[in-house]
Length: 304
Image 1 (cartoon, rainbow, N blue to C red):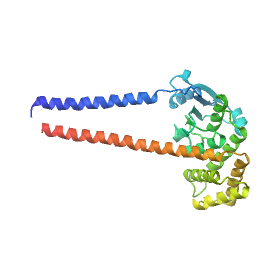
Image 2: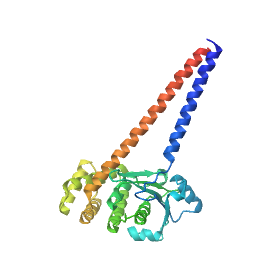
Image 3: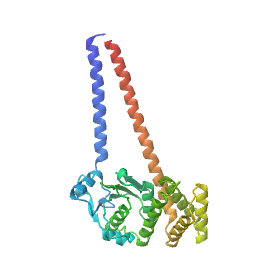
Image 4: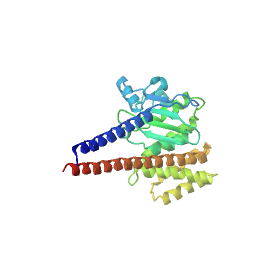
């Protein structure tokens, strides 16, 4: 085999590699480019009041805020904690969020950008609480530069909706949504329970209420008992009662559980699609890797 042919093969390998690298870079650039839905105005970015200037810049990077002219920036304070969830105004607020509203039917998507720094609240817990509060059809990115429980991020999201165009939330709903999140995180600390199991319980109760539309507290209680049995979850009498009281309060506030169910279904589909996309990307990378492995083996055979 001629030396010239060997050089041609090697050049082809390098050219293909160069093409793939540039294609990936172009794809990433397009994905990172911010797009504004003009029907809902600019995305809103909420910063915790306790953030230092350097931490605020860090959060901007985490939330991919490349141009401050393309977002609305607001700050959430301890007083907002009092306003929205009757919290302590002395609290330090670090959790931050970016809220991008989307069209009806697209569902609620939660992205924890710094999951290592949010120690108690999962995506599903955020989704359940936000749907209870009335937040629907949006992409919510949550970030914190320091370790936090994650509860205060809800307050920033609520304030963002008040700052938006005609999207103000019902205060009674935001308060019960916070109670839901607090109960969820407390239950997740119990022996034999984890965050995923608690989220599953809350979601299944809501879906069943959407189906049955209970007319009394006794019917709510029966739904909860049925789901505890079905999911093989054991609660002490006090925690069981807290769960009953929570959902009875939601029922009395006439929260649209049927709408909540549809949004949870949309969220589940979005998560499943992201999993499938990730698997697809891994398969593509593996295919490319296998191709180059075989090609390099062939080249070695030519030179040997």
